[in-house]
Image 1 (cartoon, one colour):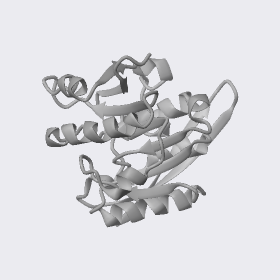
Image 2: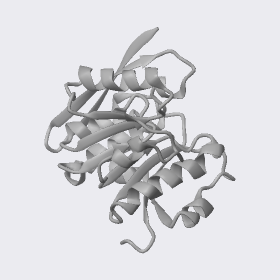
Image 3: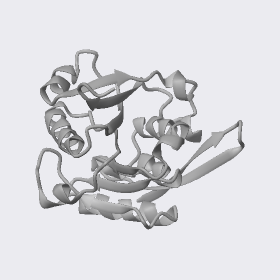
Image 4: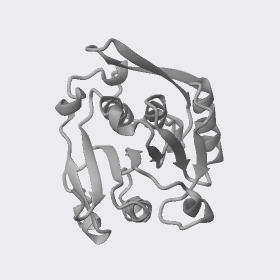
Length: 220
């Protein structure tokens, strides 16, 4: 069954607003519905839209693609990626782009931790996006291997990621060190994502969401 969820992001000072339509499919595959961390990352992108304009942005584990669509609407050059084997999910990414008038967005299948031809063909990223990628601990190393590879092409690149806190004992700090990366947490209040109803939706309200900016070590 297909449903559609609508998110909106508004700047009260300038009275500017964008709306994003997200088609979702009730399906056990992770990428077919919007997770609670996605509106928070999308809100950060909207708040930081001057930083993304005309930048090359790659979203990993894009799923329903809310952050990537927001980045595109803010003027970024966006590539959405998700697992190569998830053909239905990739088709849904294309559909999300189409219903939001963002047909210039590229959709590419890559699998975390696998150095496939598609991975090598990705553009050099200025910003990498990932919402709720850090869900299954067995994937953490592969995610950071992929991010590290993308950052080798541009050591100034940033990885903006949000995740839902599920266990206080679950950390990626050691893996960041392993891959020559460093992370800094960004408080949700800094981008108006701490008061609930993020993106005009209550999706994130009942969860503890964290926002990280990950960069290559030694880069300010």
